[in-house]
Amino acid sequence: MNVFISHSHQNGSAALELYERLTKRGVQAWLDTRDLATGVDWKQQVAAAIEAAGAFVVLVGPGAEPDPPQRFDWEQITDHEFYLDANKPMIPVVIGSTDIPGFLGTRNALIVEDPSSIDFDSLAERIAEALGKPEATIDQVKLERGRDAREQAVKSLREYSVELEREDVKRAALRGLK
Image (cartoon, rainbow, N blue to C red):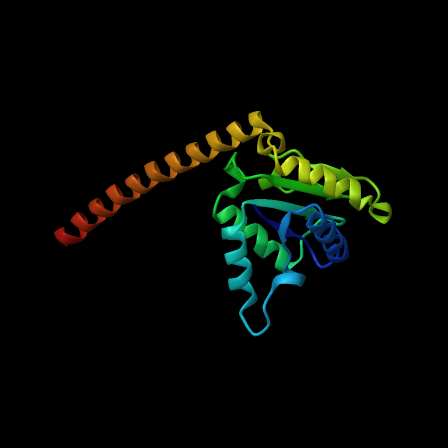
């Protein structure tokens, strides 16, 4: 299973250390700083790596906002709706005190209280275990709530689109009377 590691520039050294520890445990990981080919559009490579990933490790924090490259990762993950796939492990690793992004709210996060003293061996071991048990990475109640909310939003959008189409037909008919 190929594991995509999403990180910000700020937690890049933690991502690299985690990548190395996971690799030592036999986990096939993809990390931009190790796997991006030079001379090729980075966005295309990252998008392809995300699409090919069988699992995700998402480093969140420290700090409130992701930087633009990590925001791109998150957009790709949400555009493909991987966060709603119960068979695809997605493991948020919250570093320090920060809020978890909404799309990761259906997942059980690993919390690293002190960013200055991360036990990477222990963290890599916990991630490797979670990768073997995708169901352990999910809060089933929140996942179902998220799926229901998405379904309701799609239904509302369809109903709204039908209503707009009816109004367009009425307006076209009125224009034809002039």
